[in-house]
Amino acid sequence: MMVLPFFPPDLFDGERDVLLDLIREVGLDPAQRFVLGERTARFEEALAASLGDGSVHVVACGSGTSALGMVLHAIDVTPGAEVVVPAFGCAPLAATVVNLGATPVFADIDPHTMVVDPDDVERSITGRTHAVVAAHMFSVMADMPRLRALAHTTGVRLVEDSAVAQGGVLDGVPAGLWGEAGVFSFVQVKTFGMPGEGGVVVTRDADLAATARMLRNHGQDGRHRFVHHRVGYNSRFDELQAAFQLHRLRTFPERLARRARIAAYYTERFAPLTDRGVRPPPARRDGRCHYVYSLLAERRDDLRAHLAEHGIGAHVYYPAPLPRQPAFAPYAPPGRTWPHAEHASAHTLAIPVYPHLTDAEVEHIADAVVGFTR
Image (tube, rainbow, N blue to C red; front, side, top):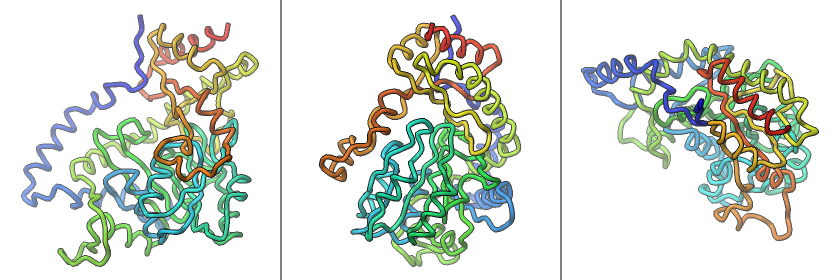
């Protein structure tokens, strides 16, 4: 039987020799600089250049989570402030707010795209709102034009959690560049994942980038060691990973294109299944990112078991909305509900979409999903 895990164990097998050579190169470098060295600087420059017009600043750091936390810190989210975040998504959306002493305010999502609903964001803004964090989700970028217009009208700060959306483009603007700052994550299963942990802040704001650079390295400015201008963090980027990501940046567009082809095939095969209880993401190309391909299935657990019987791994993102998680329940107002987030948690199921799936494997996955609905 064909076995296709959801998290493939061989993501970097084809580049093992490259990685071993880089370990030797970095380890034997006379500079003996293992974090925030010249490789990190070159990686930041190359990634900024890939995003467009020369005005982009990239700040590499320890993870996508720490990148988001540093952005919120840099825009002065402080105790007592409110930050509107999606009710459905990963824990850092709320945790980074709470860790700064601020209050997450949860907005519901669109029932089909599963990204935050701008109308509910608008209803959630109060006189205490300091910022809105918009998060892209699965295969779909959030409605950034509406959210940016809303931020402009209300005067709140707009942060873009683009951790899962690197390579996505909406209305000609790359993911990460719609708000005052965005973030990417390089954990191994992301579109530009690596064999380790890391992330970046991306922004067109030079002052915000300078602040993030200090925050990632204990508040130092990079020119004077042991002079701490701010209370910062240890969120430094690894030189080995910087060298590896520099190597892989050249082929990133090819991997993105392969993901997009797989997703397009799935959507075409699954479009007729909506009336049979399985709904694919909306079919369009603009504003798409294919980190995860997630279905909405009325019999989600049965579908997952069916796929397992056919050797196909599947994954649930996320089993409970953020305000229903024990860590964030104290920030959920009594009686408040998030019906679309709760529906998504009960019905979403992600299937494999990684780029080294063969055509035959992709067809096998699609056949299994279609077969379940029969």
